[in-house]
Length: 170
Length: 128
Image 1 (spheres, chains in turn blue, brown):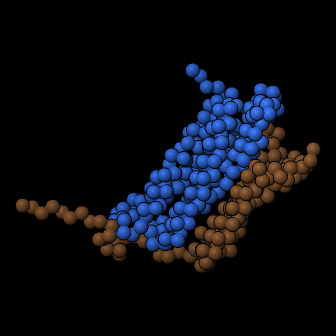
Image 2 (tube, chains in turn orange, green):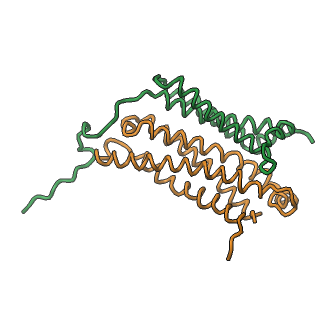
Image 3 (cartoon, chains in turn purple, blue):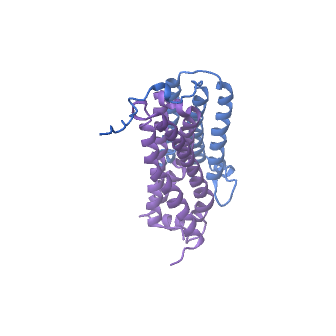
């Protein structure tokens, strides 16, 4: 039961990094949603802001690492100009060519929107800190950006998982 | 019988106790949000133009292994960071209408999502 380097990096890209963001998202969103004066104590605000600052920054960083690893490490193996590469295999069969032409073409681009949105969301949290609790609009804006990043990451992640099922990077 | 200490809820906590920083201008936030929209839209524009022109796509292939995706994403990130820096400097002490900024950014992001949707950008595919 071994993983070669291609499989290892595909795992890092898709599961360890991408999966970590998708799992952490709910916690981050709940933290932002419940950051309201009527719901937290003074001590709670400090603790909540500290966790939100660390969490949103880490999630933005994870998204950057995910797309950089995906584009610069895993994607070259996917698109290698050899008959055994996943791209070549998918395009060689009319029944599977849409997995490249629709799914991969969409995934490789939409994924890059996610870290930009998550970075803007993290910046709002870091910039306002505790002041975010009385700035409802900024808090909702951060949530909106965060949800946008999540939607882009989910589309890319699900398509990536399905493509890997059809033609894994090995 | 000793009275149990009352639990303080957030609703009961005096607001003054909450350590809130002084209100900061929202210009830097507007800059970050607009930059995310600009970076996303630049990516979409590069995707569409690359689809329409093989020579343009080839010019973005800074790495043979990655192909045109290398240039598309590098320039999108440059646009994101560059516009954030520029707008951040311009708006750093300004108070802006964040609602209007949000609408503009939402339009930019929506256009970017449409532009990076493969059935849409493949409409512009160069004839072989």
